[in-house]
Length: 193
Image (cartoon, rainbow, N blue to C red; front, side, top):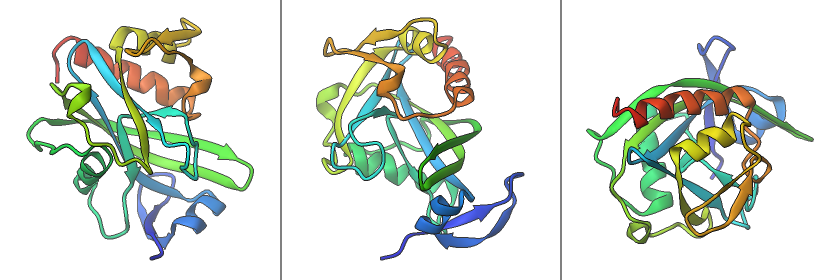
C-alpha cells in the first residue's frame, strides 16, 4: 500500500496529497504527530529499531509518526498505541504546539509541521508491549537532564539503564525543535499540563 500524506505550503495551508516518497524526495511540507510521555520528573524516550529505514538505532520522541492524508491530527494517537502497546486516554493528552522541523540528508528532505503532544504518564517501563520493527526499547530520563542535553549545556546524559548518550545519538532534529521541547518540558515540571 502506498502511503499518501497531506502536503502544505510553508504557512501550514493545505495544498494537495502526495506519496510519502515524493514528499521526502522533494522536501514538501507535511504534518507529523509527536507524543512525549512525561510524569512530572521524567520523560520517556524511545530507541528506534535497528531495522528502521530512517534513523535506525537512534533515540527519539516517545512515539511519533506521519499523519496520513485521510487522518486528522488526533488520529496520531494510533502511533502511541501501535508503537508502545498501551491504551491512550484522550483526556490525558495535551497539545503543546506545532514546531517546524527540517532534517536534510542526501536524497531525503524531511520538512515537518510537528504537532507536539505531552501525555501524562504513570506507566512503568514494564507496561509497554513494543512494536519491535519500530521500537527497540524505552528509557526514562530526568526532564532536567534531557533539557540540559537539548540546550547543549552538557555533552552527555545517563539513561535509566545506565547508558550514556549524547545529542548525536538522537534523530537529528533541528536545534529549534530541541529548544521548543525544552520549553514545553518546563510546563511539565511545573505541573502545567
